[in-house]
Image (cartoon, rainbow, N blue to C red; front, side, top):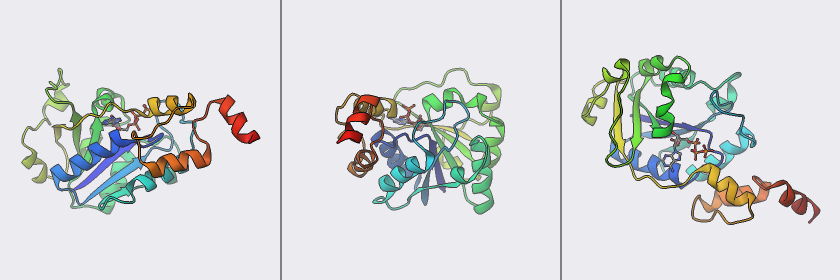
Length: 216
Ligand code: ATP
């Protein structure tokens, strides 16, 4: 089975990477493809260019076998719709099980995604939850696809919804950007190689720091 983990990754951090590793091991994935969004349909354009967000993901994935930073959304014009991404992966892997991993916050907005019901034509959707999470009332379409036995995900290549408990680390890219903007260290929240890239390219600095860096 192939895992798909999408996001803005502005920047990628250990909250993403730890959950990605856990689900890779739990589901015995052959590959876990982390796919940065070039133009997010449901939020403002990230201030850091997609090719830089991809470069940080490449650094973060480099040491982990089976992890790939996937550039396909960078090569597509227009908004980066997940349904198009899944369709392209399905063309490349007609027989494989595809698992789309989403965090609870992303899942809460799923029914607003472009052609959201078609996601299930191409992949299973696995929601990464906290322990003791209880799924609130799901729309009928989702309830009909809900499965509680992960073994079922192997029996068909797409079409099911599954909730998987993972270790939730309280880390967000927003907080990391704020720390750097305030001149504080983001160490231990994301890989050192990614911190090195951020420093080298002077990303996420407040405008004051930016001026100082340019002067020095
Ligand atoms: P931002 O703070 O900029 O909104 P983020 O840290 O939430 O960013 P995204 O790139 O928006 O990261 O998230 C991509 C995916 O990773 C989403 O499915 C989201 O639910 C999940 N995710 C984000 N942070 C964590 C975390 N700490 N633990 C587990 N999953 C996470």
